[in-house]
Length: 153
Image (cartoon, rainbow, N blue to C red; front, side, top):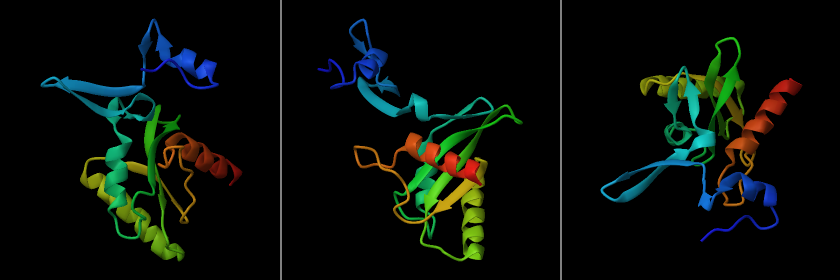
């Protein structure tokens, strides 16, 4: 069904091996049904614990003043700790710094309520997030964008 990416032989070589297509998805079979549970490259590993960014994004997306569907969660390397930490980018309409601080606190508190420690919360204005060709916010592109902005200061 799949014989390669159009005009991307390097990408095709990465995913096709001996006639098998390696999608990069994690999944399992239960009662002869396949369940896809996440993408290998997106999983956040905090002190050996696998965390699925979709779970964080769904939780944060339900918080008041966060624009629904406009959230990205990703792992950010913390060299001092020797592991990844959870980082979140969330679009909001809030402008006042005090309101933003309260929203950051709420996001971190909601994470703790489900046993997750969200270390970094980046609040951005509406339409800031980069979308993939499928129309969904792209984790890798947005992670790269926010980290580049962080480096600039």
